[in-house]
Length: 127
Image (cartoon, rainbow, N blue to C red; front, side, top):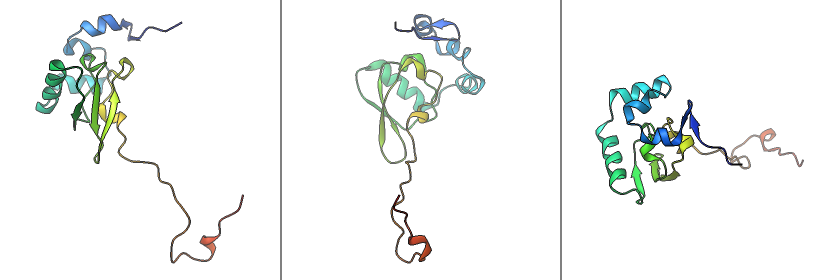
């Protein structure tokens, strides 16, 4: 059985019909304050281009933008400082920031000790 998406007691159909101001009321305080201050020019431009063409792959540097219901179902490229990370926006992402889904750091993988290492640090156990 597939579970229907709800957020703070509201169904997806109700959330989809909400304006941004109404949607902000069901978000946590940090996101609510960010939306209450208004969107920046870059964020307005991104939302405008999403409204014009929902099929297109949109690239953005707006990592701090709060995900709103209009963005659900589109593909975004969020910049992580080096490249654009492809993100499919899902209803579960509502209220989060775009930057949370485009990691800026990768896992450090160490190899064998380098040149000039001490004798004791070159010891690598076999097991």
